[in-house]
Length: 391
Ligand SMILES: *Cc1c(COP(=O)(O)O)cnc(C)c1O
Image (cartoon, rainbow, N blue to C red):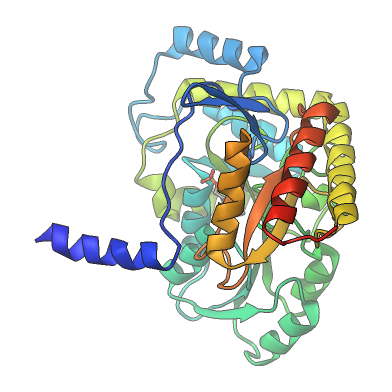
């Protein structure tokens, strides 16, 4: 029974070129990884600072395992809160310059929990068209009316807001967009939110540890000390750990701890994970040089791609999108790179809008110039072979 039902659905997914499979790593997530015994250059990791095998983080995890054991044994409001959970939340608040913070099991759970707790049926949520799926799911779960505005377009946001005069509302946006690699126009959004008395929420999953002098994210990138009511981020990308967080006022955090269902009804993150996050935060604050390298590498890599004839923007960010259009072209490009032992993900709908399937390259601070050059050469060769570039 289920075979027929789901095989048919799978056939359709395959026919549309949207079937996805996992690739299993046999090594830590670094600038090189092992897959089926081969050494592969990794150009698609969210571990932007290359910290997943960092000795200091592994030591922090070991120490926490010895002191606290493995599982946390309960949800945060019952028996799962440890002293280090509290310390991590204090450190995140200091890092983001807010009064308080709260840690969730994942970034996905944070977004779903925060948005559905904050917005209710009488609200309107103004959401950027390219926001992450976890934001979209949070909006839907809240039951609020959802007004999607054009990507990074304050003028369209204003138009949408004018259609809902006097309604309570929330503006929500990715800080650093996870597929295009561009940065939301936060100063304009802050001004608009203030003028219309709306709350503003920024998801800095990709920017945390990556943008801003101290790695504080897009808010720090723009030098914004205030105006962001709800600052969300994740510990799972540059911080090489796991978990999502929200930073904001005491009252917001206390409210979320009491109402966000993905916080209340889920087991607390294990002490080892929390210890890794604490150690990673410390590294991120103390080692700005890695961020400078990451930015330089990213700008250089983009420039080289453009020189070869690829249509690539010049954002100062490590997420580089080469839009190819059709999903089969993106998959073919990615496969051919893998034959050259280079891992670059093909990103297809539903992650991106139809017709904008692409390669997504993620630069890491730990890539050498030599590795990046090898990647560029292979991307150029495959691009020519597939007729994406001509020269
Ligand atoms: C990755 C990501 C999330 C989810 O974070 P996880 O910790 O991986 O669950 C949320 N928002 C954005 C923009 C992301 O890129």
